[in-house]
Length: 551
Image 1: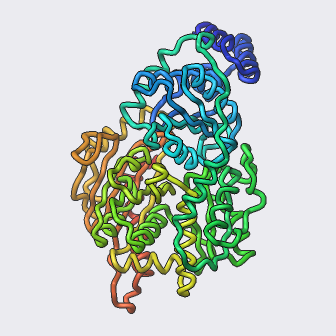
Image 2: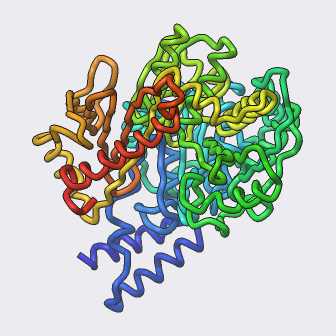
Image 3: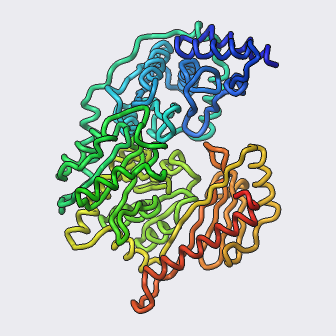
């Protein structure tokens, strides 16, 4: 076994054009030959799966890592797919963030595309992912590639693929591209061309003007604290806010510039505990009205607001409701969409406004494809406010519209939490939470899902389970996906699904509490207390009945 691994590793190293990863692998092979324990098996245990939106994984040598060999093969497979589907000779636009090797992977992709007879258009510098999605349609491209790992840890990178409609790939395109990647022969036999054409900075200006144009005339008195979390959103956000008429935000100095090491955060995701601490501290010092943040590639937007206890991060579902409220008030007509794991509130808001609503599978590759969509969101801080120009989540446009809404509220002597209270009074308080259960043995995940299918709970948190849906069977509205949806009494809901990126099973909880119109009954505050208790009770039951004590 070890001899076969060493032989495969040597063959890989001989083909690797990168001195660093080749040397890294040669050192691992030498250690394995000395009988030392290494991660050689993990590096060669299959290959990074080309799925959801492309590739994502840890940087390093071997087929189960992100490196120049894997990226070159991915680019060659994508080129073959585009040629086979009638796009030979078309343009492919390539963007990249500031992570380790993003620029290198972008250059390799460009050279493979030009070698395959395509026009490679390379973005002028490190820029947000939504700008790449914008450029695909703006430049009339057959496809786009964004080299980014979004909010993953510093040691990761990724490769996100879009087709000419400007949205991420979905089945069967992903498997068809994967099959062509698998068919790529020796790297030495792949024709490589030039490094492509650098896209003019004009594309950035067009994007900035398009986003800034989403804001209408209105109040602009708002003290903003912003952090790009060491990512690429900083300059773009500052320019959009300025063009829209806002004062320059107070930017968290320690996180202002792109840094692939993300030195001030344990995990560069604004949802993670501690990631927003520096922004909150700056907000307290500057007496800010709002804190806004992007993840490192600026396709997600996080919002924090002051409340009686200091600063509070809004949940993705709350920001989604606020943006929908804002757009509905503007008279934006069309379909409002969200993923199945997001709150059911958006459907009620759309219905009250006389607008259609649609639920999709998890991920913007599905949300962006909703016919006639004018707004879409998912609870993981992803919002699409301008699908006509960006058919993907866009943390820059979402940030601008949240600031616009906050400025309007401030001018009326109110805050974003007051608007959330208004929404709760009209539609009931929709409170959401998550439970994630990590598994050491990956085989336990399908076994757990099978057990839940076979013996579903009859009640959770004291609420009867009124309906069980096996999402793997699909429906007229949704393609099949591995998951279960429990509809509980009184409008509560639980969705259970394996994570697509981690060894976890994730549970998405929602309870709906009517808000008593009588102020003596406590109103929204009383509903929040009740909701928190119900969510805790559902979590406790899930841990004990669905997952045992291991949750």
